[in-house]
Length: 145
Image 1 (tube, one colour):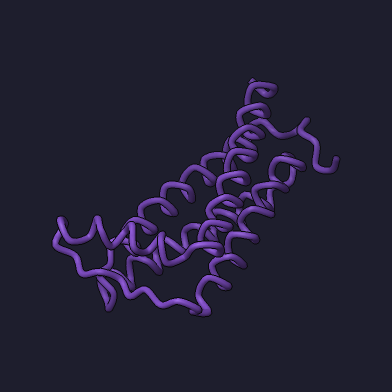
Image 2 (cartoon, helix red, strand yellow; image 1 turned 135 degrees about the horizontal axis):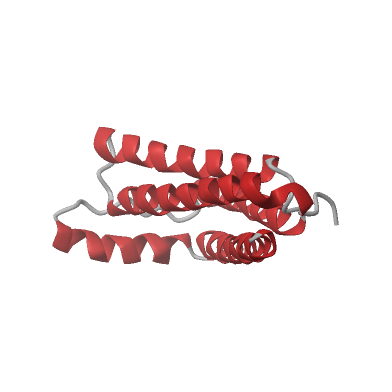
């Protein structure tokens, strides 16, 4: 189980790092088309479109956040025995999810906020599960490359 757990942990970590990097680059390179795509899906659901502003500072913040979560997931892959990385990643994803729900219900009922809440909440739960897997199995897992 320990070897299988390590393989699962590392595969999931590498997949997350790859996806986070791709999403971060997409948000940075083409933030308007991403928001416009969500806005096209919003109308049939009865939700208002999110504002789309070219040159906004938010893509920079999104890229910085995605860099950080990519780094944490990459470090989980590289140093699977270190318990700090999954806890930090789960905290970041849960914070993003909760804040997205606060914005969705409090002042910005946009589909992108709801989608982010669900996706990041799910990722946070996955990472928390990986953390508990690590606690059960990681006595022999490497903490440094």
